[in-house]
Image (cartoon, rainbow, N blue to C red; front, top):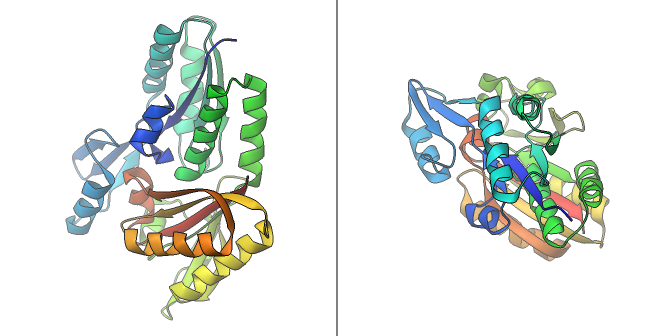
Length: 285
């Protein structure tokens, strides 16, 4: 069976050691603070990003990889594994970024016939990162490309994700807020609970007064989904590690968790979500 390699982008927020252990290739996006440009995960870590964000007078912006960036990644994989290699690229939601389009154009740029499948995950951060991890593990286990594609489709259709941001300013300024714009404007400590709908857009799920009640509402929604079934879960955060650790402990107490992750949001997603985000991703095992 030809080797299968999983490609994603740096907005997948997969921990570097995990990514390397599974031979997942992450093509980096860029983050700009005014005239300064950084390459996500190369010369800008999550910690450095949030420190810079705290002291910056300008809001950061982001830039997708070029088709050439993806083409170079594909070529590197072919050089390492040979022309029979099968590549599956699981990419940040096309509704939020042009990264998917770059990955698709790069496929057409390949001079030789290489087996490349590019998937619009309709997800972001470690949500599509988790799917990439599961796909890479399936490849390691010797599953066929079709089996892996079926797994990816199931996970993308079933995964549940809810997140609470400390402020909607960053999502507004970055133009990624979609329907959630209707929730802006409350001065009463209303915490909008956001989700990613199947279109890949950010959308409002509910709004609750205070973070504690908002998290309780998220756990209630997840309990309706999972019940007592075994689940894989990730708690995501942007620069609030203690809050995230406490939330993960609560999730483990309330659910039949068989696999867990505690993941910090990277610079690209952090540029649009800002500090203080707490999120939960869950899927039945």
